[in-house]
Image (cartoon, rainbow over all chains, first blue to last red; front, side):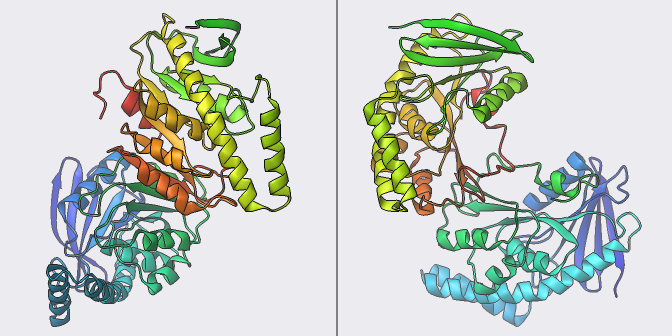
Length: 256
Length: 256
């Protein structure tokens, strides 16, 4: 098993940001400068084509650190960020770009699904190895409550099979707005922890009904669908339940 | 024009509850015991078969008074609560009951739609007359921001045409979980103020797709769909945006 190897550290506005490697997986850990012994740990998954420190994700991570004292971890998905981009990765991206440019929606969907599924299958064991290593850190430990803090599109395509596979995750925020496929529905049916599901209501490519089927698939007793107009790039989220993670990652409350 | 005639007053836990009549319409006004000059006014519409002081509605009204200092008004829908029940009202209810007992879903829907539409057409001018009268009260006045605070089923079937018809309402909470009909969709298409739409995700009788069409129909730039599992009687709302009314009924903020 690999341990966490920190490679860089900066600090600003009360947030310590540490780059790390677990084996060859590059990650980042945001934590309160004031200390965070066994604070809840939130995992974040970036969107397709983005990376672990994408501005929106970094801003949300910093907000969770300063508002709640949480620790937040993100890693680059395979072929993203600092990670090598294989010939297969390049080919899939070229094909998706060509399909969009050429207006071939069916091809865009089939390439996108194949590539997303491939990324998710590689990413789940990477996240689990990262989690094993993070739990060895004294400031996290084995008993920090863990939540999956979302990201729509690729972050959810990875987060759903990860949450289904890993009982350490006790609550999860997912987002729709990408092509739903059978393996994803199958993983969702295994999830029983509380789920907050964010749905961009109007997507140029994605059939809304398939996103609704994904929400239906979660076996969770507590699940909330939250939709606002817009597609997953232009959406402006309004009226989100900011109490979701605090409710479920608190140590004093028994998880629902 | 009728004015507000107060008929009873009680006070408990910092909330003054005053029964009133506007003409023959019985209503109730909840307000802070500490005073409420020109505080926002929230209108509440009870569900079918219920009345203005139904426990869940009264509890929510009292919470809005004590948490935000609002004034909350509710009236009995035609044929409900303290109002006379006409032979037509009785017949519609009997028919709905028979349809449910007999397992005749189509008949249940057709009778329910006909009766709901009739109630809504009678209730909208009653609400507007009530609002005219309430605005004559010195503690409310013409400039208190007004919101429609919801109630699913009948409360929404009345609230949608009311909000479409009355520009005094600047934000509205509606709920799905009842049969959607064309006149309701037409009214929803005229609504442009911010809308929070609560959808019980699993209803024994109501087609979910029709409830989604209703959400789609609102012309509001800001609209949020919030769904939790359950039907409209057994639903347990989780993670609601409690900041919706405060955001839109604040005097200092310009309405979005």
